[in-house]
Image (cartoon, rainbow, N blue to C red):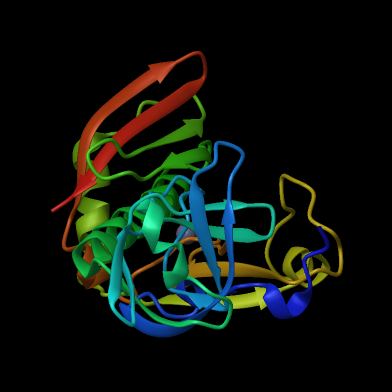
Length: 246
Ligand SMILES: [Zn+2]
């Protein structure tokens, strides 16, 4: 099916981490390949799981109904809001039906704090130890880690102190857009392909090197409180640092 532009969902979570409630309109009510119902909205604050970050959870309410939303995913262009739907409640959903989206603010902020802490840890390690290059960040609360390519042995005390000092400076995160040509002539060569003239979203903490990212971030580092280093492990030229936030 061709998915017209007017049906695409405006992802408000990319514009404002702190928007926890919004009015929206149902654009489509569909079922997935396993016959599970989901709805599409004209705009949403539900972050779909991806980029090493869990999805938002919450509820979608409307005239006389309220459904929990737990497992939001993006499939192609669709941001799918799956719902547990009793057999007789299909009439709750109609195209253009007005609804309210409400997300769990504590979960959103905990995810954003972990995700932003991951960026910061990557920036600080690369600054202190230029031989390291961050490769992968998984920022699920309770199981967060970053993997770096590099073989040095970082000093945990030094790294913890550097992180504390940067958080105390309360640097701000900035979000902006550029295309690949602008980005690479201003900052550094990207290690992967992005179409040359397509603009993409970039996050930057203070004056650290910016990075393309579609996640949710806190605006100021003080909101992280403290980055806790839990474990460091070197194996096969990779350093894995497990971390949390306090
Ligand atoms: Zn990010």
